[in-house]
Amino acid sequence: MSWLGCSQAPAPSTVVVREARDRPIELRYRGRLMRWTEIAPPAKPPHQGMRVDIRKPNCYK
Image 1 (cartoon, rainbow, N blue to C red):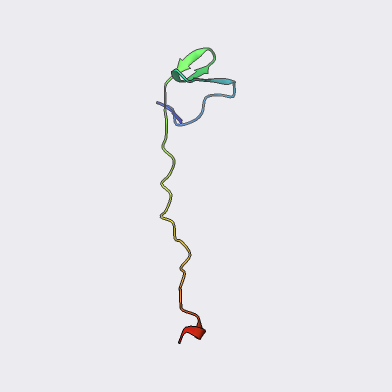
Image 2 (image 1 turned 180 degrees about the vertical axis):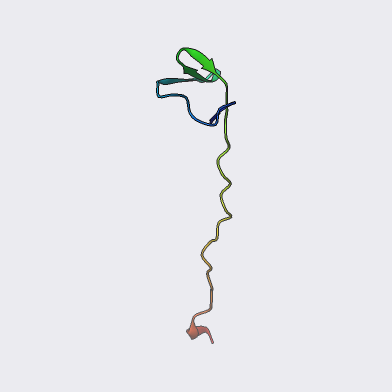
């Protein structure tokens, strides 16, 4: 989350975060409702799975 219009977090004080199933997240600082935007998490790189080399056992020549 980022504070709109601010390059820094607010001065040291308590920020109240409210979240309910039927309402959006609400942030309050010093009793005032703050605007905010959610920042998406960074994309995960594609999974580089372990390479498996399957060969027939030597007894099947």
